[in-house]
Image 1: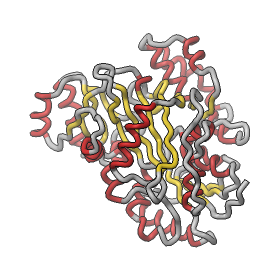
Image 2: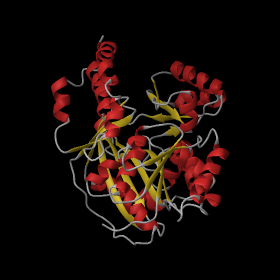
Image 3: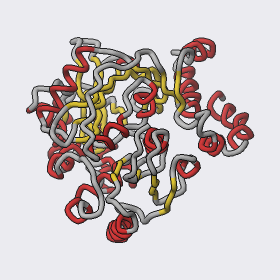
Image 4: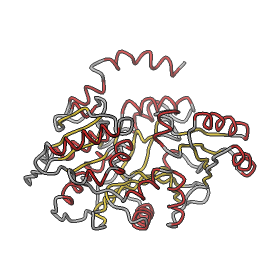
Length: 398
């Protein structure tokens, strides 16, 4: 094992950051984990956790904290970003932070465009990437014109994810709207709460038509890693986060991902979600994210360690690109997936034994790992979740 002397700092200790910290810690890298709340990564043996101010609600305090933290470490540590809140704060304070940290991020203007879902849509369209028709009504007059031309159902989702999470929901990505009256009703609430949202056509096809392409592009613009996965289930169903995903080689998806990220001059770690349209057979872009994605532990077990590649690139080791990974390996969040199964069951789309069968094969879990057991016990709540299961089942089944 190489003796990696430079420290790393992972921002966000949700399971995304937990996976990043494990990927680095398993290679002997000193890992500090920062978050404004005590989350699952605080219990990992690979991570030295710290509570910090909220990166957006207390941005000045957070940046001051981060600078003082950077000063306390002998060599500038490398930053790894695992949530949007931290991404926004670090991106807009990057000039002062580069004195104390090393990072590989897209330029600020590009991140700002990606964080704005309508600008992201236009960015992808200019790059020649297939996208669902998308509209951004800012006032009632625009909404009145729009409702006449839409083909229902449509999907309403956040223009700015952080505002949506703060004022609408932290778990629900958006709303399916089946009529003009529903559209007006939803937007009257959004306008009242001053939450900006876009309207997007719904791409026809099951949840298994969702795919993700994940990349690491070096500071010099070299594509070092490209990994693809398919969603098996998501939570909430149909418009949620992948709770069971599977590594898959998909040449068309790989080509589309390369085209997207190279055409926008992307740097660092990123991912893009696509959905296969059952009608026209096209893969269409759902969204881009400029940070580590939730299931990054899957890439590691498949032979592509994204955090380590990022680290090696930034300490000047010039690592070789990796072009192959293992297929048909699953990443599972068991708690989210059980809830997802119950939702599919209510829709009469899944039976218990077919659900169990779908979990077979080689897999990695979102929290539990034999070499790092505490986070798994934390997630169970040391028995609390087990005690609540009968009530949980009763509420969902009856």
